[in-house]
Image (tube, rainbow, N blue to C red):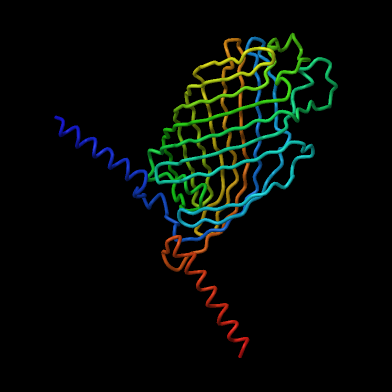
Length: 357
């Protein structure tokens, strides 16, 4: 009996390893494009928002980042290597008074997508000031340039139907989804959020009849670990136009810290939900790739036993255009760059020799 159990366990480990690192793809659904070198350009806009929600009065303080400007990036991809460089442009934001810094990357394996992200947003404004603050003048913004938020997130998603559904086809140009397919998803997540200000995150002039929570919060942080699941599907038309929808929900264990003015720090532990969704459409052919889409990530976290939550949300809109060049041989990443470098040097040497003659 123990021998049988050991054989089953070994087979499970073997199948798990193959699915993660060496999965066979159904070529009727997924076309391998790893022998193509792609160049790409993108314009994207990342935003951060958080709200402090008074559940007793069903009202909230809604803060948005003061820098909602767009950025542009350019880069290339070949096999497992994908590099992009982006800069902020200031487009689409007339009131740009804040500042944002983002870093994100992902590793796309046949069945597993690993994601890492970190961000810092400096400067916020209260978007519903007219309706939540006492005697606030209409048409003016309540700026809070002292408020800073930071986040750090690591996640891993397992796509069960990895032989027919390709996440890589949507993000790294390394595969092409040839036919409509979908997959159930199981994921794990670690996330840390922090929001702080030089003065309380809850203004002293809030309307008492609308917002009854008045503790002076200098800083609130939430660290959570959770697991969830969802479903993703890519609809592909004969003309190579596609639409993709990816949605997940999960349950997380959350530890909250509140630093208060003139009061001891408070700790609170609770279970809460998180949600993440991704919607995009585009065109994907042998040489051309175009994608327009957006994603959102939201966590509602209790701050204590007073009926008050903090809701953190990050969202991004993105448009990407890429072109693939077919490589004459199936080079490794190292071989490609060393070969092309040597070919360029030989071409330069011949050109100089011709000029000398």
